Structure formats: C-alpha cells, structure tokens
Image (cartoon, rainbow, N blue to C red):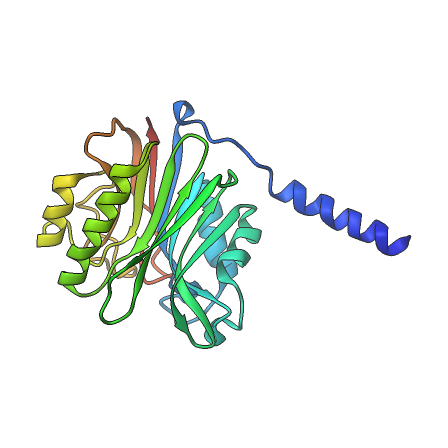
Length: 250
C-alpha cells in the first residue's frame, strides 16, 4: 500500500508539471531558437541547470534546440532534451541526426502544448548527417534544424525544407542554426522562399562577442504573420550561440 501511494504521488507530480496547454495564435505565440551546445558554455563547463534557466526566463511556448546529445558519454549518458524538458516543465521531442559517442546527437523541440504529430526528415551533410524535426500542434507547426557547414548541402537541404513548408496544412515556422548568413548565397535563396522573422542585423555567434548572424526563425513568404517582438537574448556564457526569441500572431 505504501509503495502504491508513493507511485500515485509521483504520477500526480508529473501530471502537474506537464499541463497540456493549447497555444492560441490570436493571443500571441512566443518562439525561441537556441543552439545549446548540449549544455556546454563558453567557459567549457557543461551545466544543464543554467541552460534550463535561460529557457525558462524566455517564457517561450515552443523552443527549437540544436546540438542536443542523447545518451552520449560526453553528456554523462543523459537524454539532454528530456532533462531540459523536465527542468522547464515542457514536453520534449528529439530527432537524431547521427550516432555519437555511445548515443545520438541531433536537434530537439520543447513545448508547452503536447504535439499532435511528429515527423523527421534526413538532410544532407558531408561532414555529418543533418535532420529536420517537424512538430505539429493544434493550430500550427514548428520545425527545428541545424544545417551543414557545406554550402552545397545547405542548398540541397533548402529543397527539402521548402517542400515540407509547402505541404504544411497549418502555419509553419522553421527555426535553427543555419550555418550561413542571410546575405550569403544560401541566405538570399532562403529569402526568396521564406520571410525572416528574426532580426537579420542582430548577431548571434559567437556568444561572447557575436559578429555574425547564423541563427534565425523563418516562415513561408505567403504566410501572414505579425511580429510583435523580436530579440537576440543577451546571454554570452551559457552556450557558444545566443538565443533568439520572437512573439508572433497569425
């Protein structure tokens, strides 16, 4: 009986932490994108508590994460997306791009609303394979990605991303570390298909002294979106990238 009571208390605690909120676009949706380097900061310390603190402070509805370990030795065998989800009281979804260090490595998404569907698409990367994580909610879709360091692979990835966005039956937002500046060949090609919702003049990398923009959030050009707020969060230590935050209505 005592064990049963303990189990029931634990189940109630978990259900209280993860309340399935329905995010309503008419009230404004807060999106965040953050390459968290699996919790490793500019001081080379790996600390998921401070990573989670940055995410909680942003009070985002959905968070696109890049450079996420899953059961990798360098992260102590932890499922980093699950750990951050628990610390932030959010649902987590992970997409593995490659096998890495005894586990996996890829991108993830945290959300206050429980996803209704999840898709994962392989993307090219000659230095390492890449992935596009597409998570559907009741009223919209958010994707997280981390593109290749190679220009040709980024351009090939854009074909996949554009096809996914075109096929979407709900408003869609794509966020991540694109490894290219908006004024590059890739950035210009992306701008012909997507609207930049984040500030393309606000640098995001490296975190301590940012001098370039390689992280952003976009949406299809035909999609009607009102950006109520946009910022690059002033966080110079917790990762090697600074996080992005926008508030949108659509």
